[in-house]
Image (cartoon, rainbow, N blue to C red; front, side, top):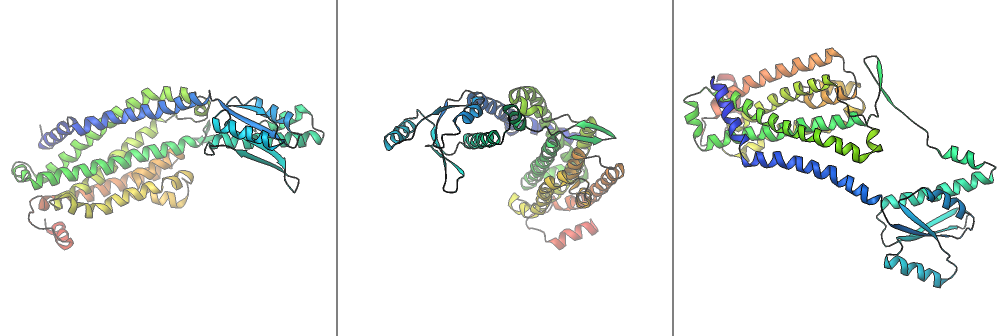
Length: 414
């Protein structure tokens, strides 16, 4: 077995059996369950809401229309009341205060002759209820107006039916149903996976090197293995840890996806989450290349310093590049064929996140995909060449923090 494979196996076995890895690997599926079950439970409970609202129609013209409008809304119970004097007003206030009523809605004409609806309640943060009441009053007023203009009941019902608006995605000369939401969701999810891997596992590589260097274990390792082999072994081993963890999470997500879609019902049916196999292939490709580029940079920074506080100052520009690329996701997903999005996705440090974002949103020309992959591989080779030189000199440097000029000299002469 080669020395690189030995180092990779050592890093993998140590990380995979650590308490931190086991806890986070289990914790994420648990959070997935919570995020899936809680919304379904809330939806189930809200569907059996005992919301009760009293309506006082001081216009004396909207009661029939209000009854028709709110009859189909099972999430609330409507009762009509009078508001003729202060005594009746006090009764409504008392019932609202005791919780017998969620609130009461007074509908009247203002000084200009327009309909004014005022809702009074102890709770004004139930925005779903407020929107439902507002839309119900608007619908009743609209019905009354249309009826006065001579429209029949059938005509009014036809006008109130929502217009169906569908979208289709054109790909490879074929149109397929797509809400557009799936492209945005895929962009953010895939981008987040790459982002979290680069930030989390890149920093882990740096921390591992710093730990071995500060404990002087590095001196023993370097005596039996070349620094370049040690560098590559660490990157591969920790990369395999990331892939293992994501494999567990993907299996858990697939197991929960059926429950989630079933619980969400009609809302989920509007979103097509079908992921093309070719997109998954590109995702793995950009995922691996992105990890290799940034992991190599993090490894180089870890070899320069003896403690993580000093290393963080040099790691910040690397982390900033990852954050910056993630900030461009929404723009790239909404305008994937624009010149700025195309140019940004060809920058090797932005490519892993932004090119996947474009691929999930539109058909990217093959020459752009090929060019981005070539640029990333060339960038990785250049970074690996420089990082290997820095790593070779840095891992055995103790007692002082090297200046930028010294690091540049390592690149020139190591």
